[in-house]
Structure formats: structure tokens, C-alpha cells
Amino acid sequence: MDEAGTPFCVIANFDTLDSRQDTVRDRDSMEQARAIIDQRIAYINDRSIGWSREDV
Image (tube, rainbow, N blue to C red):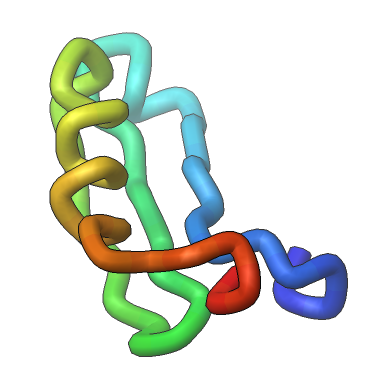
């Protein structure tokens, strides 16, 4: 999704079912972090503070 300009990618796999966590990847830093499903939106919001539409 990098070509489409998607700033974050959420990856769920079979481990997600047991751990209730998925992986969030940041397009710009290439950082990957595990996030609890219920906290995923807060995780992404925290990392996108100060962005404008032009930044995406």
C-alpha cells in the first residue's frame, strides 16, 4: 500500500486470534509494532498528531 500513500498498514494473521494483537506498520519509518486490537486506533492517532492531509 506504500504506492497508494497509505501511512499505516494493519496486519492481522493467525497469531492475532490468540494474542488479540495485530501488527501496525508505519510507511515512513518502516517501524512495526504489535498493538492490542482494542487500542489500535489510539496507537495510530498518537502517531499521526500534527499531520495534515498534504502529509499523507
